[in-house]
Amino acid sequence: MEDLVTLKASILQKISEANNLKALEDLRVQTLGKQGSITVLMKNLGSLEGEARKEQGQKLNDVRASVGEALDKQLAYLEAEALSHQLISEKIDITLPGRSLPQGTIHALSEAMFEAISIFKDMGFWIAEGPEIEDDEHNFTALNIPETHPARQEQDTFYLPKDEKGTIQLLRTHTSPVQIRTMREKKPPLRIIAPGRVYRSDFDQTHTPTFHQIEGFYVDEGVHMGHLKGCLTEFCRRFFGKPKLPVRFRPSFFPFTEPSAEVDIGCRRGKDGLEIGEGSDWLEILGCGMVHPKVLKNCGIDPQKYQGFAFGMGIERIAMLKFGIPDLRSFYEPDLRWLSYYGFDAAKALREGRGL
Ligand code: DAH
Image 1 (cartoon, rainbow, N blue to C red):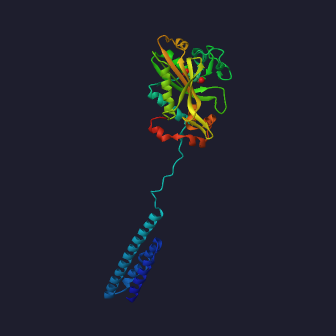
Image 2 (cartoon, protein in one colour; image 1 turned 135 degrees about the vertical axis):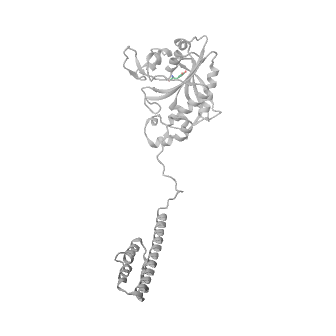
Image 3 (cartoon, helix red, strand yellow; image 1 turned 45 degrees about the horizontal axis):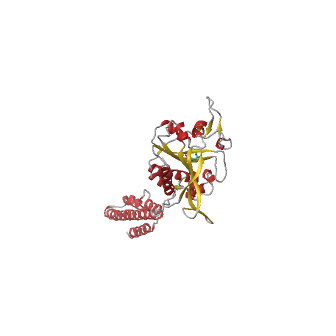
């Protein structure tokens, strides 16, 4: 009897000291398992007689129940402890910022192109397109560019083999042939812009063999130089974001316009580079003029009835000026540092509904 009290106390003591699930399970096997100390004592009850057997049986039942209860309690305690350990060690800090993926950007050229197009669209211009592989007729002849014009010389123009009809093929050197194609296809009034890629055999800090232009023209009855000046002054001021930007129209020459002008914007060339809209210097940014009567006639439009203005500008050039990019060639180099430095927010572009 004394033995059972001691046994119970010692087992309960061991259970309370078991500090892991394995040790607890071992204790369970050692006491209540098939060969466990309590099980063996129960089996031995058979050797006792009468009252002694009954008494010992009750005591053993009591010991077994207490041990079973203690094992369950300790098991619940150890499991709860293991869980809280796990919760602490695997804690997720939801306040940590997420790991960001490398993000692409909108190229400065696309940005400038989009901004220019949206200004002209606001003014009621529609977009037209033409082929990049042109013929001599659309790129030069119909635009009143005589045989002797330097633009026709091999060093500027990329010529391609003649087509099956013997027509001279070339990569268009400007977007002006879209004027011819549109005027031959549609009747005035026409208010069109033609953004696109053009090609010239040239390569230095301000020239690349491929570059982009936006052509624009407006043909209707009674169109005059005042419309041209108003439209382009407004464009320059909005594009460069300077409502008071000085804009100057300087007489010039293009075979397809008469009179012709070049447009300059006010700037200062200081130690720290170029500042647009300040100072007393001028910077040329585009060519324009009144569509030459011969060009209208070449397209079957009566110059007595209709007049038009036209303009053409290099997009890389206006992008370089607006964003302060010093070298044109960098537009076409796949340098990720350049692309992210001069790039624009793609998410913003998507929100504004462009790009896709
Ligand atoms: N096509 C000319 C060029 O590439 C630019 C130009 C000048 C276009 C005057 C025009 C214009 O429509 O009227 O240099």
